[in-house]
Figure 1 (cartoon, rainbow over the protein chains, first blue to last red):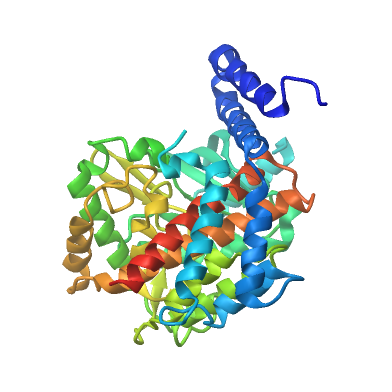
Figure 2 (figure 1 turned 180 degrees about the vertical axis):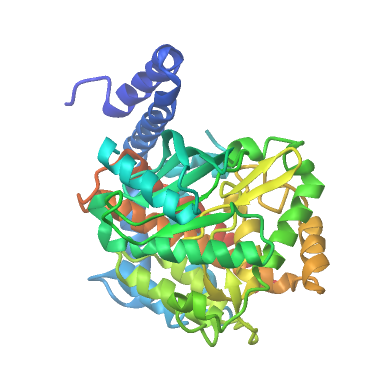
Length: 118
Length: 336
C-alpha cells in the first residue's frame, strides 16, 4: 500500500546524485563529509532492502541454545563468556554457525565489501 | 586565540626559552577536534627561526587537561629513549596564560594519513625499510620500563597484561546497550590460551598506520601518545599488524606498509631478540576486539545524544566487519 519507489530505492538514487553530480563540485574540505553521507545512505538502503526475518530466526535459535526465551541475545553472550560453547562442548558447532550467520547478516548491511560484495 | 592571550603566550615563551627577545612571528590553527587544539607557532629564538607546535585543550574540557602534562612527560621519556618524536620543549600547567595548560614541541613534516601511506612505495624509505624502521621505533619505546617516577601517572604495571585486557574489554562490553556475542566469542578464545608472564614495558597502545608520520627518508614522528601505558610489548606489534589497521592493503602485514618479517627484524636489531610471533597473533585478535569496543563507545556518544555526529554514527557500523574478522581469527586459533 506504500507509495513507490520505496525508501531503499530513493536512498540509492539519491546517493547516486550525491556522488556523481554533487561531489565533484564540492570544495576539498567538504569531500569527506559528502562521502560519509553517501556511506550512511548506502547502509540505510541496504538495511531497508534486507529481509529482517533472520533476526527472529536467530533469537529463536539462541533461545534453544541457552534455554532463555526472554533475553536470548544476552543469555547467548553470557553463556559464551562462561565457556558453555567452547570447542569440545556438544553445541560448539551449532553456536559457531549461528554466530557466523548473524554476523554475516550484519556485515551485509554495514560493510558488504568485507564479504567481497558491493 | 585573542590578542591578550597571544601576548601572554609570547611573554611566557620568552621566559621559558630564556630569550627575552624571542618573537612569535606567526600562529595558525592546525587541526584538532572537540578536545584538543594544535597550533603552528613560528618564532625567532636567539636570532634564528624555529618552527614549533603548541598543543592545548579547549577551555570547555579542562577536566581532562592533566592529559597534556602526561603527554609531555611521555614525549620526553620517548625522546630520551631515542624514539623519533617531535622534541618536547616547554610545558605550561598554568591555565591563566592561554586559558588551558599547553605544551610546545618542535614541528616536523611528513604524511601520516593511513590511506595515503599504504598506497606509497616510497614513503618511509620504501616498504621494507619503513617496516624495519617501525620495528626499531617500537623496540626503542619498549626500552622504557617501570618503575619511572616521571611516568608515575601511568599507575602500577598489570601483573598479567593479557588477563587485564580481557577483564577491561568485558567491563566495557557490560556498559554497552546491547550484548555482543561475537566479541565475547573472541575474548573467550583469548582466555582459553592465557599468555605466559612477561616483563612489562611502556606500550604506545596506538602505534599504527595513521599515527606515524613519514617522509621519503623514513619515520619523522611517532604521534598520539594519549593511550600509552605499561603492558606486554607484543600488544603494540599486534595493534600495528592487525588486519583492521592495514587500511585495505592487507598483504603488507606490518600496518599495510611493509612485510612483517622486516618489522620483526628491525625490532630485533634494537631489542636483541625477535618478537614471539604466536604472542603477536594473540594480540592481533585482541586488537580487533579492542577496536570494536572503541567503535561501540564512539557510536554510543552519538546514540546517547551527547555528541550527535555522522562520523561517530558510522563508526558503529565498523563493528560487524571487525566481528567477522574476530570469528575468523578465533576459528583459525581453534584449528591451529
